Length: 488
Image (tube, rainbow, N blue to C red; front, side, top):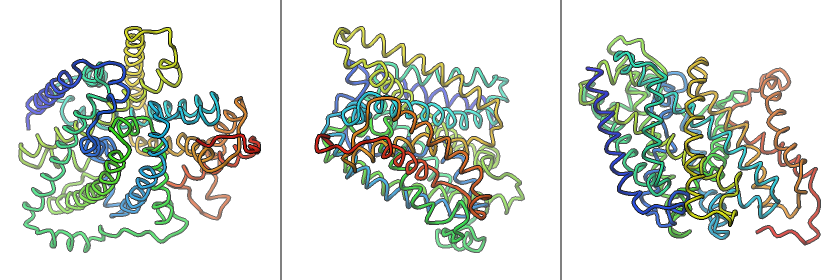
């Protein structure tokens, strides 16, 4: 299909986003940008979070993993499902009770400024690296399959896409993103469902016949019972649960949308509904992956991994499916970047600069600072994507998972220590030292686990190991409360 025609649909899609942003950002202020004036509809937030959680990594990579790992990814999804209930009924009540704008304010109230800024710093590092890695993955697909044919250089592609995101998030922030994420999730799911139905129809399969064909190929296998393997089912389920707690419940981007909902009850309904829908959607992505490999085998195609879905959708399926795929792909791209850009701006302004606590600044001065920070993060995103382009792109997914394990572990430990113990931490360097030392220890453990532990491989449970080391370190540098600590 013509690259020019496909690119025209990308531009048309962006114009729709811009129109939605203009409409939703009218009369917006700093409160709108940070928490949507706490007036977001829970159903819109729940639906829009699907796109944010899945991102381009899921859209492109999960189908590509089926040949190697069958439906094993569903072990992690089961863990995700369990983790969302912890977020809904442990963390959300805490955030609403304290009326937080930044969830890291909890650490300030519980432990003081050092723990507070340490938590915010780990979020900022993790989200910058994770969001730009996801952004790079999708931009690279657009570049390889469309823009290289138009002789558009990669840096220009990245600049234009980030400029687009900047344009529609600059004013409205969370208030706008709640609506744009809903639109983007709709198109992403449309792309997924259309591709599943079309390939099933092309191969003359019913749903039952599809599952039988996948089973015959061994693609429907879920459980991995090798306890030494990084894919062992208990590791995957437990690790998935803690990844959800860390990357959703302790992540300002995800919680910024949840606490923009009117009240706790609606926010919990949002989270529970979202958890059920996400299980179904991830199953559809695995089903699509199996179908794509069956289609590739039937047509003697060599494509696999991350190249599988784009290669078949853009080169072997009808034009209308190619168009839907491209729109679905960019719909997976934007939620993984726009929400991150907004959340990073919010966290840096509130947690690092203390914008909401500086009473000397009026609304106009605060807005100027916020817009400047927003622009700086957009530039930082551009630089990071260029670095990922320079690095071997095959390492991107591994980078995302490792970044989560190393950066969300200390966050999980800090929040757990505050919620489940009565001990107090001194407001100084020991907290920062422990939170920095734990990931370093985890790095050496991960690198030498097979050698030291008889072939054991550290996998998705890295985050939990990191959190346990950090928690132990915090216990060692803490002191009994003597009844004087308010657990909040």
